[in-house]
Length: 216
Image (cartoon, rainbow, N blue to C red; front, side, top):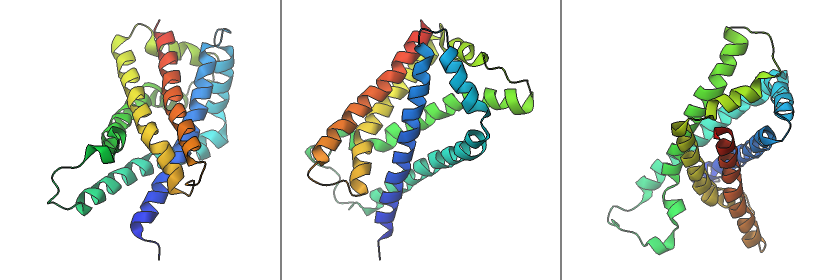
């Protein structure tokens, strides 16, 4: 029988890879907001995503459940790992593990705090606009709303940038490890790991670039 710790590790990896797919798609859409077309492409895609019933009532709930599951599983694994360590080992050899692996729980907490802020900034107003205030669909509002959220707001820009840096830390350790957990541990793993590391830098940098451009 497969041990519960292995099951937790695999489900944690799968949920993380699922969220990475969403993250990639989210960045691809947001990058269109800096296209030199005054937000036309971004408005078109955002409107489609915002009113497509499959996205709204199937994919979005699955995504929310995936986020909650990933963080809860992360906390459970961290608690189990702490319990399994022998109390007599008060110190560890830092050469045996990277800073990223030793602080995954902290980077995860920062990301979770960011998601709360992000939901407050974008998802809650969107729900209010469509389902509480019940406004008519407006396909031209998304780009202006995005610019308004960042423009001239030093504190928000700082919080977003710091959060994306911690996201990079989290991805740097978690992406390759997730693939390894589900079996991608062969002779090409070193190449895969390098690609994952590049991704962990490029994606947060892309989000930071978008935030800075709209801030300016």
